[in-house]
Amino acid sequence: MLPSWLIFLVLTLPALGFASAARGQGESRDKRPAKPQVVGSAPVTSTSGFRAEFLEELAYCEQRYLTLAEVMSAEKYSWRPAEGMRSVGGLFAHVVIDNYKAVAALDQELPAPPGGLHLHSTFQPESILALSEDKPKLLEELKSSFAQLRARILKLSDADWDKPRTMMNRETTLRGALLIVDRHLGEHLGQAIVYARINGLVPPWKQELQQQKPADKPKP
Image (cartoon, rainbow, N blue to C red; front, side):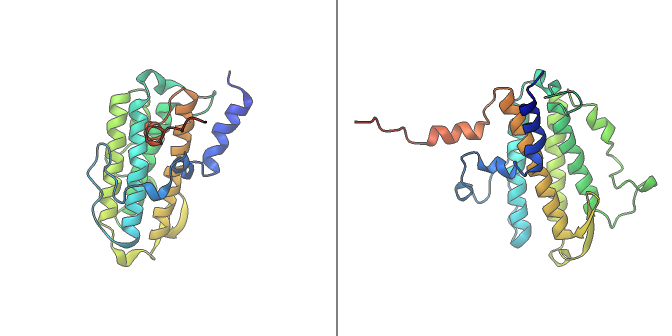
């Protein structure tokens, strides 16, 4: 059984915005490429203003989610820090589900499915959760969910940013809806980093930064 302090850490860090923290593992934001290339996805399409800024953040999160999902072994997808908490695969499945839900929420002008569920007709959360221990299939769903979210955002009109929108049970504007999506992705990215660290994995981008640092000069 894991120590109580470790369980507390996993539970509280995401809620404290630790994944905005994902950016902060020794990494300076001003060193990030302006338009990052994303693993398994097309480059960020050039746009301007708020949309371009959000798409850059989306690419940032996507790249790290896919990297972590790939480096975690298939055997670790069933690992969970404690009973009742999400497993590694369950965490990635949750991100996939909420990405698809975000796409559906951005499509609120479309007729809602029966029962008031704001989900695309081809999307069933249960089918995603069933893949939580199937690394190859879940990884493909993770890539697809980010690709669909990006494609939907590219179709938004800049004239609609102040229009009302519901996102993750909150009433906000279209602009606010994207900020909620960004925060949600950030929170769970921090959680995914904690899961990796507990299992002895250093995030690859952290390793790259450490290798780029100049070696300490020997003391005289």
